Length: 132
Image (cartoon, rainbow, N blue to C red):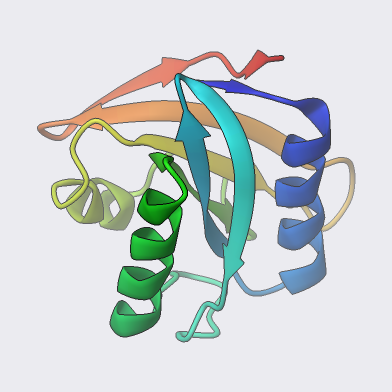
């Protein structure tokens, strides 16, 4: 997935804004290009995990598909650990095969750090963020 710097900035800004809790959201893609960032509410309101309201997520996915796009990535932040998939992330990924995982590390000091992964069958592969 290619992503424009402005869209990536939206993701990072969301992570910083929601800290110290984790943020979450999804990225819509069309033909391998990110076309929109959709912040969602972390209903868990937790610094250790994220949870999206099921019906709200379903409605958002339907809206994205009705606009001719697809789910390209799930993003969230880590506010107390490095931006690397946790076991919780790996477990959650089984329901979303082929979807990219963008994780923003939001340290107490310093700049946010962004990494992207594919998680397939519990196997984690870091993929570079391809800026458009």
